[in-house]
Length: 428
Image 1 (spheres, one colour):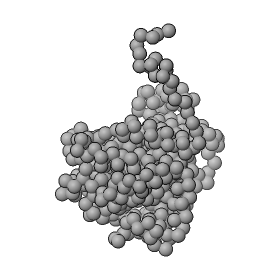
Image 2 (cartoon, rainbow, N blue to C red):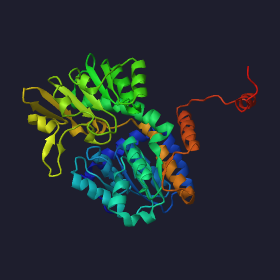
Image 3 (spheres, rainbow, N blue to C red):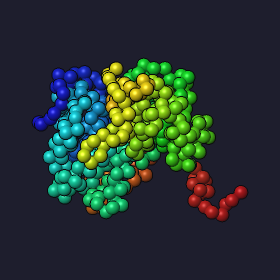
Image 4 (cartoon, rainbow, N blue to C red):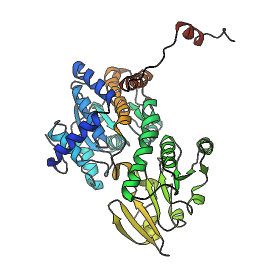
């Protein structure tokens, strides 16, 4: 078995952590039990570019239980948990190509390694796997029946490909499932981002001014949790409806240029590029802490370069020196002596310095992944090369199974209620 990981001797520790996460993933456990009996993915080669965490390990185990041949690589250079990769290889015989802190060259080498198996289904978190297929490994596309995408950033990229007519196989937008984004994005990102910031800095949030850039579901969750820790929240937005929501949720809303001089903490969760730019860094107070919880580190203008590779803008250009002051903190000193503290190189702070989303929310997200893969196998002949939503019956079944796993029962409609909801003439 080919693989490329940091240290196989970390496997025992990784196995224990995978088992701990599995205890709080009842939906995935139920799916795994069925998959073991029915083997709906028998013979299906799957290449997955995901954050290699304990929760992802349990997804990989579920897919393998269903008969799939699974290979994993990382979807972000800093999100890999090296003990998990070791356990996947040694204990579960699942090939992994991921090392925490890998450089960009190694990152794409690993993506190509999982593509070498000529997959039938892809799983992506950020669309780097699909992008590589369409730009560099086009000869493999004829084998592929479809894929899934886990995150907002990836779906933006895939929809752009579909609109331009270059997408060559169907993709299911797992991120858009209600049982994914309403819980994973909101509660998972909220808790894990605050966790990452605190682990990296050991700073107190209570009484601070915390600037949340973007008020989608991730931003909502982050604002909610930081507010719960006692921070004073400022939200920046470009969408008037989301901005209005933030106002009515009790937060101050203003442009990033106005928020820059006030914030103690800044966190981007937008999925866009250069949300906090050089001119904003130049206005920040001494000691400001900046980080990102969106998929790519492009949300912060750390170093913009021209075609020749010359540094033309960004925090790197603004600073006169920098030093690594803690494991996940780089201290940038500006010309007037003010310091700006960048966390985790601008990469996902919740996965770089913490452990990512709690297993109970990833339970639903990865249940969507597993059942969407099964759906692709069953319906491959009916699907076109566009981006599809997760079928509603899958979404609702996952919610039902999650409630069952939590020991919660709900009402069902009476025949009278069903008749009323289906009628137009009953009125008052």
